[in-house]
Image 1 (cartoon, rainbow, N blue to C red):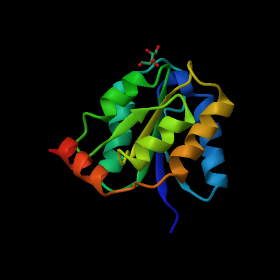
Image 2 (cartoon, rainbow, N blue to C red; image 1 turned 120 degrees about the vertical axis):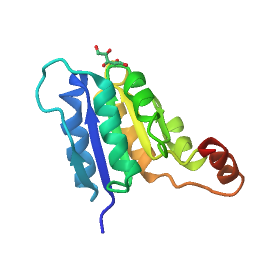
Image 3 (tube, helix red, strand yellow; image 1 turned 135 degrees about the vertical axis):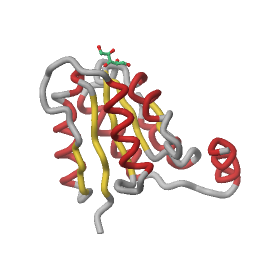
Length: 144
Ligand code: RB5
């Protein structure tokens, strides 16, 4: 069965989110895009929390969220127990947050990265695997 990935954002990422959805769908992932669907100004915390709850509940295995900087929506997502979300602006970090931190969500800032880099960051995140071992000990310490 295809890995289910929840996507969400605030109004800042209304143009980029569908492009990421199409990209990961073409790679064979199942996309659960929970909006928003209009360009009306909205509040990133509620969208970050809603996406994080999909991952924390097990409905989706991974999440990708976007706002202007990626920072605010990441902060909201990380308030949900079980969520490990990092903001990435480069492909190395996107790979490492999975290999070492077992991140289950990726956040990006659409006012920071362009479309091409954003899609490469998504690829780096999705292609990486958690290494476990000493990193599992540390991730367990985050979970408390
Ligand atoms: C919205 O203007 C902006 O504050 C938001 O997209 C994000 O950058 C917050 O972290």
